[in-house]
Image 1 (cartoon, protein in one colour):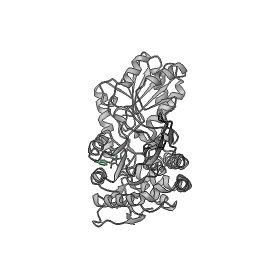
Image 2 (cartoon, rainbow, N blue to C red):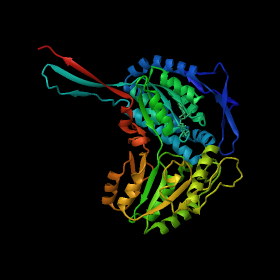
Image 3 (spheres, protein in one colour):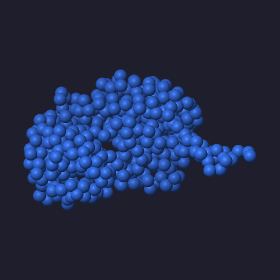
Image 4 (cartoon, helix red, strand yellow):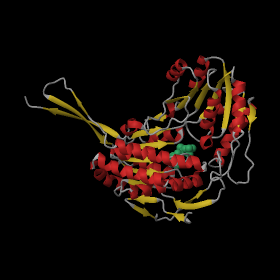
Length: 482
Ligand code: ADP
């Protein structure tokens, strides 16, 4: 399916080889087999990509929103038509079940479609002046060249969730995908080119994260960096981008609590918690990391959850009906095991799973795991696990559950399960999170703002709010005669 070597540096509309010929291998995390090699680019490729994006900026930003919109529509259409093939590539490099991968590709196309629609809606304002002789106008202007740094857990949708609004706004871009998953990025860039994107508007550099990131940070021409990844790297980008006062949009780590109240529909809640925790094998920043269940329903809830989890099929994401693929790499596996060991050492009981999956594949697989008796001091109740373990802690009243849910430096997503509307609204308002799901665990949609508070990030992706990140509000003050 892949060449021995895949071209992965795209600058000014051309696929390039690097002078150094240095490459890095992309593996299938299910089998640990080599898929292909891609370029290990660095500072000089990034510099050229930024130059190309700077040259293309006046061309792209001066097109009308409707003209940009047509190209984004075309890209959305091409991506949707090719979703099955793109989904397979995504599963091969990332591991998630094919059905999820195809769903992600369609969702990724959904961001392009939404922002194709938004491209012609960058409204300004005419502010009534308090002085008769003045007219006050506000016009939105694209910020300029942007650097987009994306993670491996959603190799397609994290790209379009950033590039969709950036391109719609009139920005040009340099994209750096995660080293684990460059192949989906390559396909997306090909789609943009096929859709008629002018040269230099979208550029791609794969390779050395530190070197590419450093060029984006120190190059004056990059006006904004949009990043999804760990809080540690987000903080680093924030510190280092201060030299040129760059704008930042950061989607960082999370530690989502799910609270199941005693008035929840247990059947519905168990299915949703399962979807939240085990989608992408727990490797999503909004997936449930800790579960608080009211003591009066804890036994019934845990037992039903266990029955459902026991039905889940593990294996290669390309296998029939597989719901749990591999973890991305050995480091991820070690973290999951460390969280499990720490929880058990501190008194948690393994209700289901609790160890590596002993299948016939070489990848790093972990059984879907449920723990009971979780306590506040456990690592898993405080740090992002990014794997398929669900720790259950019981609570006695609403205030206690909300206090525990809020007791973290993270603030991305939280979920509540209740059939009581008063409680749903009350609790949603008190939860200190950027996103609250009420009997809903899939809040990432093109039309709504996704983003964290506290140390989970700054800025929003999705909705018209997502495009605002890429627009400056220029104020024009006009003095009139007389
Ligand atoms: P994760 O632990 O989920 O891989 P990271 O924050 O390490 O999260 O990675 C997310 C993205 O950030 C990836 O594309 C990665 O290559 C990139 N990245 C990691 N370190 C840096 C850095 N110093 N500068 C720029 N990008 C980086």
